[in-house]
Image (tube, rainbow, N blue to C red; front, side, top):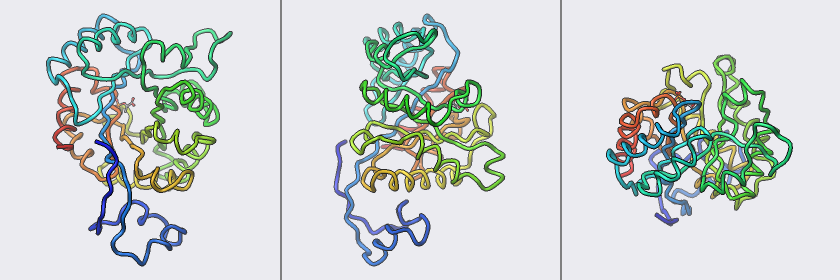
Length: 296
Ligand code: PEP
């Protein structure tokens, strides 16, 4: 679906009217009741982050099974994000059964050179990889990735034609300390420094509260929606409002078939980044079907 002109008299104010009461945009937007705003229909994006799981053989069987379960999906975008070792086999399998696009879990910001154990954006593009997850909390927490490193990776990915899925999210201590907005704002402002408005269209943001990742504890739809609305307002401040209205923001954190639909029905939730529950192709297929139902 391409961009469309939407004329609306909102029942619930759009995200940019829900931000701080004295923002310059709110002041401008207070008087008109009917507002014509050009927004793109945000196609939902459901991605499977396998983390360090599944061999290249298992990846192939997974793709075959997923193809049998869901076939071609046009209403939403599906992305499989295997470990590096499974990318070539999965790329081959997806050529025959194009049920999903391909993503990678990480990359280095340099093009090539003495960086033992690393993979570059050019290498990923050569394997027809479309997306790359950057700034995942496991990379930040276990491998010391900083906002500055994430920023370098985002810049390199965009220059190479890869679409970054940029992960942001707060810890439980930060949530309990009322610091959610401060943390999200910093991660977005620092991580996306230097990204121009054209490049923003190639980005996906994943809101992944750390306390919900791999814990079985999911953010409530209201908590997630609130964070997504805030993220959109920060994107508007670092870019512009049409860009913020168009950017897709996924939720990640213990998404499973049982809770996916309710989350995906929220106005500002444009997809899901699914870890544990995506390791079983049938489970992931149920999440895809839920997303299709919500998008219909
Ligand atoms: C993730 O790894 O991005 C994730 C959200 O994991 P899980 O679904 O297992 O919480």
